[in-house]
Length: 99
Image 1: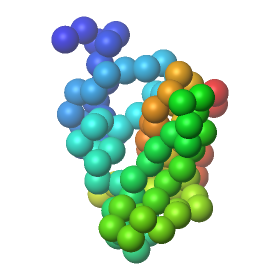
Image 2 (image 1 turned 90 degrees about the horizontal axis):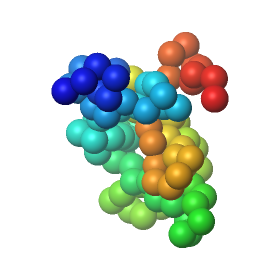
Image 3 (image 1 turned 120 degrees about the vertical axis):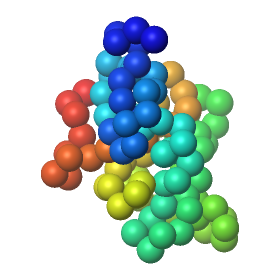
């Protein structure tokens, strides 16, 4: 494992792939634990092959109208990744890193 390719997940500290664009990206395990403020599990999707962002409450399939989610009580932000897929990053004092 190279220091330039991995960094500790900001939530659980497990080594996860490092992307310079997403410096606070969480690991896959933490990603799967994303929930809303009420503790309901969330699922995230691209809306089409060309991208877009959609979030739902996993159990009810109800549309979730925010990018804010929580992992282990830590406030995070889910968004469409630059080249497709969804990335979740930890927020610090309500802010994300500059893009």
